[in-house]
Length: 176
Ligand SMILES: [Zn+2]
Figure (cartoon, rainbow, N blue to C red):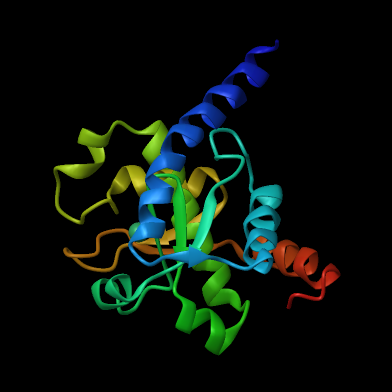
């Protein structure tokens, strides 16, 4: 097994362990997201500047109400191998750039959760949106801007070049 392949296996195992947590989320009212959102995940992953360290797969769910209350402006929230997408936002806008960028934002969390020690990203202002989060975003080809002290570096989007590739990819499946 090559070094790269072994690393991929390790990522996958980490993700598998967190699947348990995903199941727990389900019991809190989260429901499985439609296949269209998996297409978004893979279209993004395929077109990143690098896929090194990015989980190969995550569980996607629609967000339950308590998440909507907690994160009124966000379409998704990442937690323990799970990416949750706000159902209302998805149903209202379908797969638009907002949903795509939110998926990417949560994918950065997924990466950080595995690659960056928790202490480093937790015990500081700005929640998880610290300079390390911004760096992670940029290494995958995204753009990350500082919002405010509470939100930190949370304004995440794909570069216009990558966004165009992702949209083309999704168009092939008639999803945008
Ligand atoms: Zn975030």
